[in-house]
Image 1: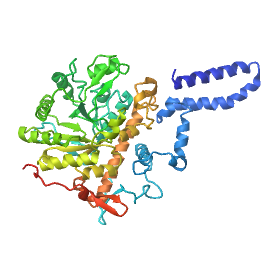
Image 2 (image 1 turned 90 degrees about the horizontal axis):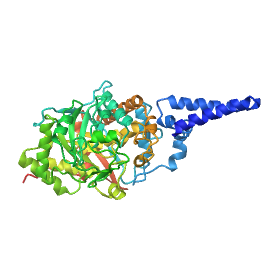
Image 3 (image 1 turned 180 degrees about the vertical axis):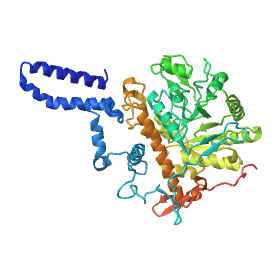
Image 4 (image 1 turned 180 degrees about the horizontal axis):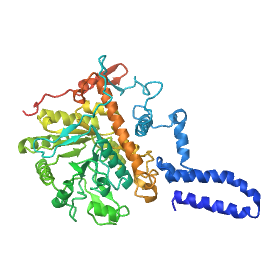
Length: 509
């Protein structure tokens, strides 16, 4: 019996006992002065839709919100910090919650970071700043090169890859409905196209991983017919071939039998109640030439939709070989998603999450400069992924070469994640990262969809305000020279000095 049902059972039992005893000893009626309000409070918690913790843990869950209300004064000494000592988790968690709830996201007492600590970053504003039109429309980026028959106008900020199975069905539906309301894209993750991704008609980026879930044969190899059927659904706007992810690059995965339900097995085209392994590499190709041919196959089978690939940079020469193959074969992906080694996941070996894969900034710079050096960037858009939460994070990624951005953890926070770190235990108290039906009930789709839309809207607006403050007319004008970084107590460098850009075509010879 779960906490919600347990609360109702015990409350009703206590009230019944009090009524029975009161027939013989009337003073016990006074106990209802305490029990009655707690019972009514619990009923309210269970029926309200805004707070998953209260719905799943009536009355007791209120303690969390009590501590949250006094956190700035009491909890500041217990927050996690980044490697430079800044309390980023608290700052950015609060930012996402405030924007998702349409609350005031300004902060008192100015900068909350040590501006003289090595690692501090800032943008150059202009005395001739632009004014952002109150009725501004978000600029879109068209993804699709000359071989693409169905180009897609993509938002500047989109939902990064998170699979159904890792996330609950309610969390997936809330994200997708929010994407539909806000006009941005939702990456399915490698777990396949579920009915929950399709229900609300939000734009989808269908990710194809090494397990080919949703488009595989019984032996785990790629099934072109199943892929064609899924990729031609009107909700699917782009296809992303996942080579690796920042949280655990070069590492496969396993779906344990206890999580492999009948429903998940049907979606992923696997046998239920069995352990299913995702290999660390694709079986459809083993070199750059075969990979480009596979991308061409995906383009043809999808009816000409944009096709790209996602990777966390490891061996640089392997990406250079891919670029050379693009030139020799004439086959070019429509986009490349660059994931940073700092990316997150529900569960990964500590060694992989902490010590494998190039961080986003370094990887993004390398990919952009390599594409420019081979004169390929004009045909390929870049998507950046790796702890992108704020408008400044977007500006920094775009300054380094990205065209648009992905966000995963911020979108999870928007739908109610409190970073309880129970993702790998199936006990997420907010119903976000669990398949426990009792906990999932706490997450109300309509409420969290609105919050997802709000977070996206306010963050993109904040980004565009930063662009205007720099005196620029559009995000395309941001360059590496607009971002500064303190590298010592008395030394700062611009990104253009830290990451000098290469000349177009300079690598062709």
